[in-house]
Length: 153
Image 1 (cartoon, rainbow, N blue to C red):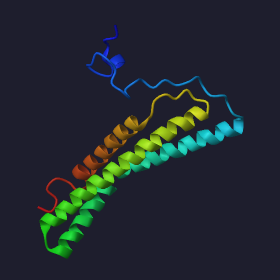
Image 2 (image 1 turned 45 degrees about the vertical axis):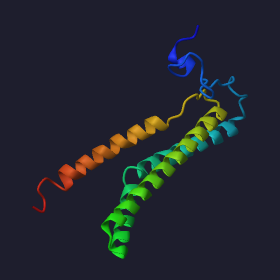
Image 3 (image 1 turned 30 degrees about the vertical axis):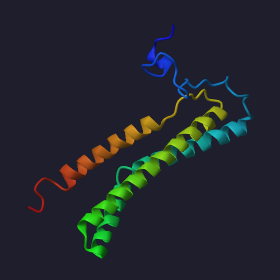
Image 4 (image 1 turned 180 degrees about the horizontal axis):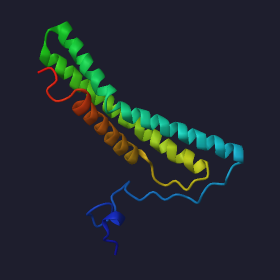
């Protein structure tokens, strides 16, 4: 009897539809050296795109949404409408970026497997956590050192 939650898809007796673990076939037949180098460089390009898009989620996207909201506030004269537009824009852009990141991660797995690596999991979680930590350190440095406590007071 299978009772391990990872086997049954949760706290259910039977497996829920669509929750079976992903089973990969054996490693694909290796291509030539040129093809593997091309696939490896394509995987590196996808990785760089994921890092850049993930960094955009921590600064430029929220700042752009705040700027759009301020322009709506200026044009309409309604602060509430500007905040609403900024919030909706933030949700749309961040969830759109996350959807693109997920697709890039799936493509990265396939390209890594085509390059001859036994890649079974993605790297998106590690990229997102690393960029969050880097952006937190950069923000902390700006907030404490560059802006300084009490500047302008």
